[in-house]
Each structure stands twice: as structure tokens, then as C-alpha cells.
Image 1 (cartoon, rainbow, N blue to C red):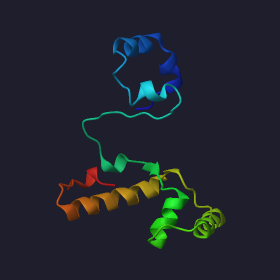
Image 2 (image 1 turned 90 degrees about the vertical axis):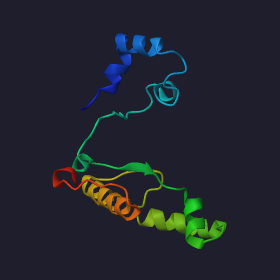
Image 3 (image 1 turned 90 degrees about the horizontal axis):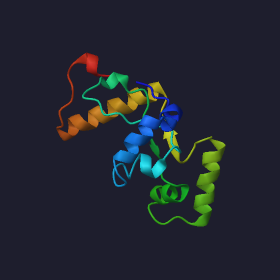
Length: 129
């Protein structure tokens, strides 16, 4: 399902439904971001893991990554060195989304981790990436 969020936001029925929900409903969603985000979160009863075409999230900051790498609080020199490596190798820091091939790899790793932890994992090949 694809939603045109610009059209939805200016729709009077949508705005009336939002108003009738009350000021405390959706405080961590539409009331917080209004029309500044371009993402859609849908609740669906089930889907195939092969239908996941991207995973996203935020990396740690360069300072935090330098500390993780060094195993101790990083010096300014270590932070600057890491920042230079990221720039030279064109490694983005911050928000990232995977390409479809990357999403399949991440999904497989999540499934492997779930199996290791004893969580139920689909056996039906049609449900897998």
C-alpha cells in the first residue's frame, strides 16, 4: 500500500478525524511530526519476510563509534581520524536505509539470530527472503 501523505494531510476528513481523536491520541506520531515526515507505518496481520525491501535506522555518532572502536573514551584526535576515514570511504553516519539486497541480508541475519535465541521462525519458503 502506498499513501500520498501530502494529499492525506490536507484532506478535511482526515483532519476532522485527527481532531476528534483528542489531543493526547497519537502524541508520538502525527501530533509530534505533523507533516514533516514522509514515512508510513501500517499495521498488517501478516506479511512475507521476502516483502521487506528495506531496513532503516540511525548509526551512532562518530564520537560514540570512536569510543566503541577504542574501548575507552576517544580523544579528539581519534574522533577526527575516524571522521576522515568515513569521509574518505564515503561512509555515511546518521540515518541509513538498506537497498533491497541489503534488506534480504539483514532479514536473514535477524532470522538466524531469532533461531539462536529459540524464537519461532517461519519454515514456509514463501515467507522467507
